[in-house]
Image 1 (cartoon, rainbow, N blue to C red):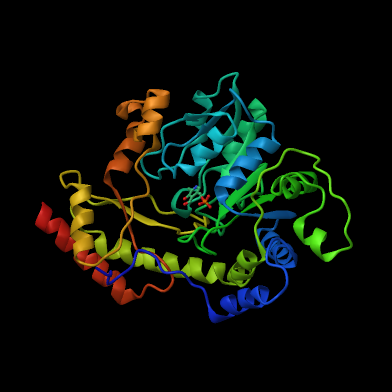
Image 2: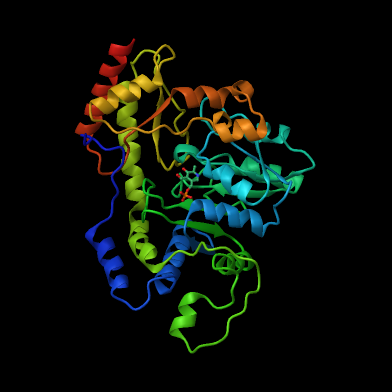
Length: 381
Ligand SMILES: Cc1ncc(COP(=O)(O)O)c(C=O)c1O
């Protein structure tokens, strides 16, 4: 059945598609001048010296860990309330993800909790800006300095945010972004890494393409020169088609963020009187959230999975972001986690439901989602 209201609709315009079309009519499709332009534009937007275009946020986190020498047996403290990619990147680097429980109100990990998990094996902290709200980067940067740790941000949910004057990538070693299909700007699959160091950026540009000395564009558009392999690399290079789809979306990021904020406020208003329904804490003061996802915690006495079923039967697309990672089979078996190890993440993960939130969603559609949601909850309680 086709949903009346999809969980997500992208915002690609004819101009975005037109630019990608131009690339497809050019001789060269992979990493080239469009990626360079995209990197410059995103770096300007973020107020950072360097952005490196990659194929995913997962790849970005993997490379960031490797760049900072994190590998076999090292511990990386992170959150269980995230997409598995945060932890698979750590595992791909050969390191061990160490979870701390999240704050019950925001779903974010907090510096004081992370400090309790630091051992002599800890090499890095990897906070996630969950649902668009930034983690306490000032606090994490103080902690990282105190314990001489690497700080890497999973910024898949937040390009647009600012907290206590800090934006993604400004006080960490690297911030990692996703342009996956449901993200605030997208090219289907894609990612980027932002950092303050030019040396790091040139390492990433080499490592994203097997660690070879001449990139693909150079090899085919300049006079032939032998290339060498200088470092061990991977295959994470963004191509010009992805960059062309993304580049003009950067200019719309702030407008779209504002629109999602307005829609989120409407959801909160319309659903505020539903008995037992809880929301994650909204941003406060001057904080700017990316408003990437709007999640609600269903009333305790109601089965979340039945709510999902009821909503889907009535044509509303939904998602669950996320069931806590420590409850997933691989992690239970490999690390021996028990459900009660991280009670806040468990509780959020068992009750959370994400409602549609994107700029093309209309006010009428939000009303319909809210009325359907209330109706489904009523029939189940
Ligand atoms: C919090 C979080 N981290 C990491 C990722 C991975 O991003 P990508 O698919 O670009 O590797 C996602 C993607 O959905 C995510 O939501």
